[in-house]
Image: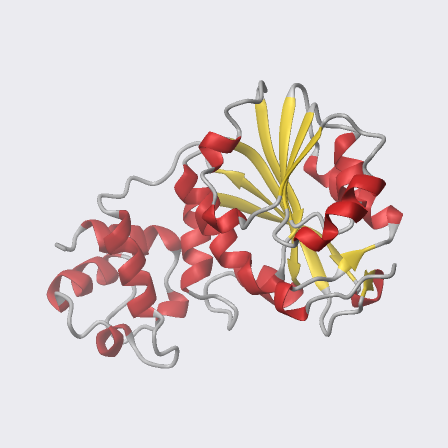
Amino acid sequence: MNFNFKKSLGQNFLTDKNILERIVSSANIQGNSLVIEIGPGSGNLTRFIAKYAIHVLCYEIDTRLEEILDENLKDFQNITIIYDDFLKRDIKTDIEKFSFDNLYLVANLPYYITTPIIEKVIQSNLSFKKLTIMIQKEVGERFMALPKTKEYNSLTVYLNYYFDIKREFVVSRNAFIPKPNVDSIVISLIKKDNLLELNDINLFNKLLKDSFKYKRKTIKNNLKNYDLKTLEKILNKYNYSLASRAEEIPLEVFVELANNLKN
């Protein structure tokens, strides 16, 4: 392809048809569906999505791709492309004109804005049936990490509050043009039907960030500005202590800690 790839936009286009098909198969798009894709690039994945979805809504920030996408997707009548920054859009307004029963997100996400995109999806409060995303392998492993592992961090806990996260498969860096420096992984995120009761999501988020601020420090040291007596009581209930580190503590304990603190 005669195209000047922009590193600043994280442009690495996936060309392997077997992998593209496998991503869409993992998404398991069903029924009268609208699929959102972020960063369609040259439209390679979009073509596969459009075979299964009733509607496909793409967000592409790089207007230089308009001619390429028009050509590559000319055989499909069910694709709409918004040339704008997904992070600046009102998703609810954008999808109002579509009639659908199931909402999905399927995308090869730019590495540098993976987390902001997922946070925007969460904050939209839309009922996504499933998110199937390809992201940097190292980042994906953090999303799925278990307590007491080095990958486990505040983002792990935050995402696992909302989603059941499943590893689908690893994608070699050799499957992309241009070739990135790292391998990728495809994961699925399915919104949990019954979220743990949480009194204050902002306090929960702050607690997580502060708990993991200095990875090798104890809860007592990282949270010295919090009500340590209350924290200690909850931690002891689950056989942890103020001398424990954040990486040891599971999601449900963090939720209870947040629910017993006052903002």
